[in-house]
Length: 157
Image (cartoon, rainbow, N blue to C red; front, side, top):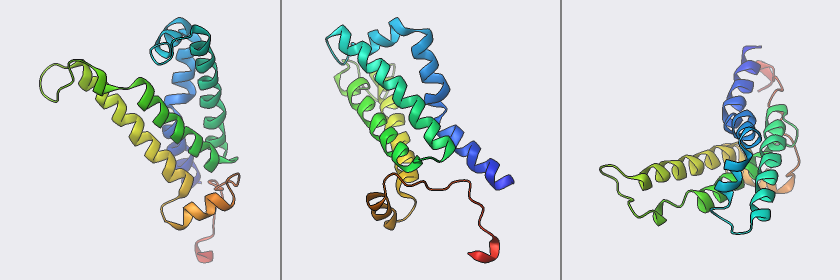
């Protein structure tokens, strides 16, 4: 039973940025969310659409990871989501004051960029597993579950 709790908590930690926090922020502060999205796209209607789509991705994919239903595909989608948000909204290289020493707004964006990329790496590990054969397993059956809550008897390994 402890192993099930550990796996569930690990998955909660992996998605907690999205569900509940980022999604809740979009709901409680829609104007700020749209303003942030507008930094990457010019059309206000597109910014609103991106916020709505982002919230849907965050909720649905996080729930899939937590329940283990098509969790590998959900992790793959969230990895892509993290990479896209890093490249579109965490453009540290465009800040006028990016430097590694001293006060720098760009460095703060740089750390946010790296956090998004690292989180994408975590989601890819969930997608493929920890070995090269996992890539083939995912390609062959992308909608399959990783069965995270299955308990295997110690002697059956």
